[in-house]
Length: 56
Image 1 (cartoon, rainbow, N blue to C red):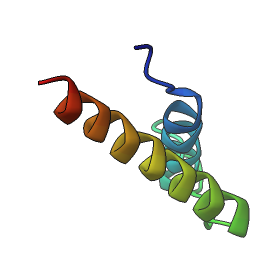
Image 2: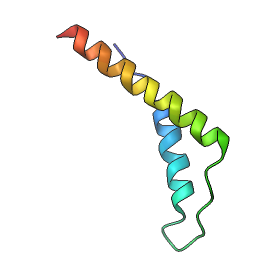
Image 3: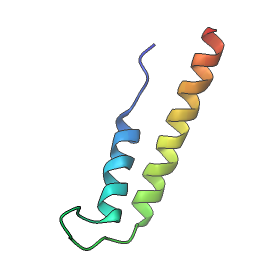
């Protein structure tokens, strides 16, 4: 089974954007879209872990 990672990677990019540029850029506050994407990413992680548990 292929595990979906699109939302997980998108959430990681958004989190890095909220943390700020490593070269000293100002961080941006999280917006509602960030939390929506983060929630979807966590759902994908949970589904992937559940699938792995069923395969064992």
